[in-house]
Length: 100
Length: 171
Length: 345
Image (cartoon, each protein chain N blue to C red):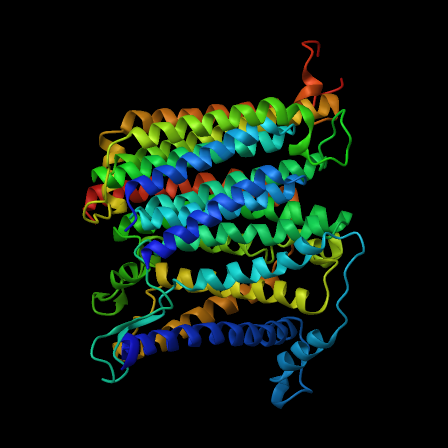
């Protein structure tokens, strides 16, 4: 029988994978994708707990998290486009100096 | 039967996520992430949340990932360019390996410690599929204020994205 | 019976098989219908050599497509190049899986319990169709990218941008129907449309929601990239858009996906607005005949549109989707909501 713990462990693993992607990759788009992985891991935790506590609140919070993730992805990608146009590079290290 | 389904979806989700962060080509990363979202959607169905499962596909896999795909295709810069040797895999380069891996492992260890200390949360209770009507009712009564604020958030994000991505007018 | 294989299970599997093959046959029939209708609109004969009145023409087309040489541009991304048509066709078939096409039936008393006439019956069926339709965008955008050619990339990006723009109006128009019916399950929406007013006007949502029907059908035509919204794949404009570099079976898969998407949009429109399988003179168990007739009528309308209307230019198309259709669908939703509140549905 699959208990709540299984879902929490899965969610922790996904979150760590996302965090590893943010720390270790040097490509802006892959970093944004890893952030999405982390957000999804959190969504899974919310829904699992909502189910365990028998309330619909978990699903409603997930609804809001998804909306915020969509807005953040849109603005983040617009920023990436602006940065790329300036430096022709997607490596965060090339934006290390404060000078534009 | 549901156990097999859980392990299958969990394996797909973890495998696809690992491949996402290990791919050189961002297009493959995006596609693998879509596969991961599909597996997560299956997990939501197993957790008796069909509405969340379907909007995961519609919003995440169907809209946000299309946005990512468009940006990757339009920017057309498929490979990471760094000061290091181009042929070395992105995850094996010296900088990321030293600090990034340590941080990620530290996070994983912390999460594992927190989970092992938690009490026995045990099995789930009875199945009670919250119908979409119940979620909608709750959304418009208890959570009406966050709902309206979210719509303003989306408006702000839309305007922001258009302004930020606009080409400077060389006049 | 061993291993819990009940008659209902066998019936269900049979229904799934029937739906699968019926979709493929309907694509073939559509090929023929398109060419014949095009011919009559243009005052010529159309295919008449192969079979009686050219009825076996689709078979000849399929044989030709199978036997053509399979080409691939050298610098194309192999995995994505071959995965894209498969993705398109899979999404097309999967979307039809949750569309019910008949009332519950016991197959003339062979079964103990009635079984639903649909490949799968889900109680959030309408959202599932919407979700799978949004996945269909990937086949096109990946085909455009993987071909590694200017025409394909432009066509693919334009086509997918068009599809995701019209998805919003598509969704809002059936949100109004959901409000009227109070359920997301297509079967229940159809059941709300049984019965007659004044004895002879059927209680279809078409009569309560004419604007909604117009928006749904327009958005559906734009979603399936058919004329007058087919700029991204028009022969005169962009060579052939995202499927320029494809030949033989891969092209056939895109072709198949487009026709099956047409069938799905018509079937969903029939279930939502035209009363599904309810109709006079036939018993409920033969309601699928009415369903076929209504879907056939909508498909004829589709083909007729293609050969009658001139094509929209891409910027006109996008402007129409965002500046006309979207506000119209929002107003439709508001008016429907006001009506439901006032009249108590």
